[in-house]
Image (cartoon, rainbow, N blue to C red; front, side, top):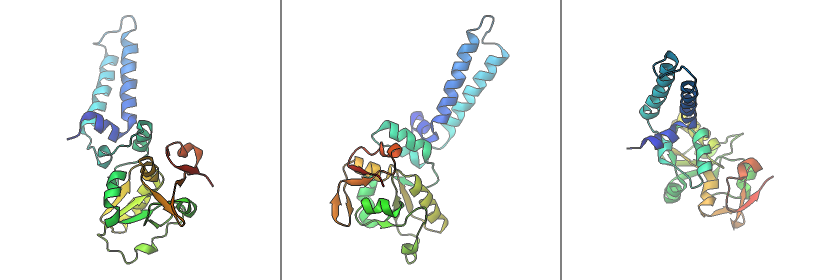
Length: 213
């Protein structure tokens, strides 16, 4: 059973922001001369706070609640960006399962060329190519990754819509895979280079040699 703080993360920080805003509003209001806790406005503020926490505690945690990455700022970003629409696994789970699954790289060809997980099949993103799945059984385990998990989430959703029943997205993507010290390769063999997508996204890649092109 997940605690309230884990569910809070799963919902995203918008709920927390709303709660803090309501609490600040209450404090400002009751600090004014002649304002009391029995006032109509105070009751409205308290109703907002209660409703927020009912939603917070009553919403199912979902797949994201069980996931995390070491960098807390990166983790917060992932929780705001991703949703509970598809199953999610950690890079540690990916490491344990990758040899038994079909692993798909949902990045662009130039990103894949810099480095990728050993054995991963490139499918792209802007021009998604799923020809490699034409003869794949619908119940075969499929794991999809990209840089951080956003594009692979979209591809995972597409696969589910096409009838694949055992598809998972990688939380934190290849960035977190490399951050944990796991290996990547290119056509020459093992490498430290990783396509970091852009400087604004590349800051979440804490290991390896960042490549931009």
